[in-house]
Image 1 (tube, one colour):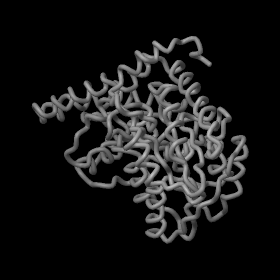
Image 2 (cartoon, helix red, strand yellow):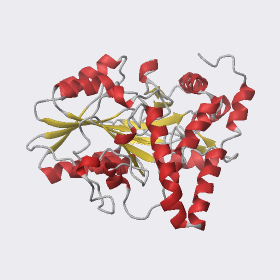
Image 3 (cartoon, one colour):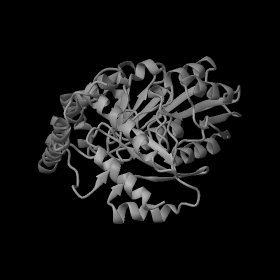
Image 4 (cartoon, one colour):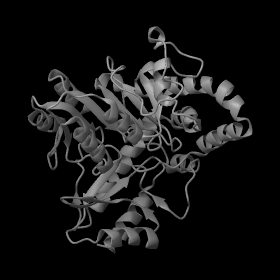
Length: 399
């Protein structure tokens, strides 16, 4: 691995640059990432300028900063800045798609049985509104290759499938799906693809243009360690005019001949229609370049090597607990920075959550699935082997 020779002192120094409660073991970047000090200072500086002179900041200063942030994020994830809409989060992005995309009925919206619950509800409402059915299909219980996963998608798609929704990285187990191959299969069948990339950005190498989906959404507040309130929606080529903004404001009327041109607001006319929802705080979006710069200064190859080491240690350590069963495949192409284990039958989820937090101050989600309960550990570069050991010890005394 890339960082085998990097001493622990290097990572302790990198960790010291993150705002972390010293009394808490944070193994849950999969839900929220803590802020690096420089990112916190940057977004606080921007908010101070907004507070001191709102008109000057929003009208004169913010537009150039917004365009810079758009270009930096697009470059980082292999997208096109003129097809990148900033949103508050993935939920906002997917709701924009689900609430405005017109699908032919009768037909179905198809998704896996491992999708995030709130997003399942989002598509449930969209299906009801458009006279469609919502169908889920099972993923392989413990896949050993990407081909096995693609085969499951291939078998599930039918001539009634109008839209396919799936997560690039599954929230419950951390399984990484072969997004490009799945999108290719859907495209051959003329099925629209919408990808929930909430966990992918900065956890795994990402090139949205290579994936080739119709819509890709993501969060910056998880693995990129950007402020809460920074998410995005990317239009695949040819999909720019298929959506309508959730709210109509000053970006609504525009010149159809100049939709792609950069405007004086830090957007294009098309993008502004989605981003301008009335008065809002754009500072989380404007601080995204600082988040990119922070981890770039450490080195992405080094960070991913560190994550790989910690992610390998989690199953090695927790597998010593006889009552736990690994839920995340160990194959590198199917595994990112989140590792999940099945908890033994009969585990009391509320009680375990209380013990992890109240007695051990450990942030690690206990996830309820139809098949049972999962414990999930997220390991970013700032985590340590000792923290993983502490989780194992806490579980040993609780299950």
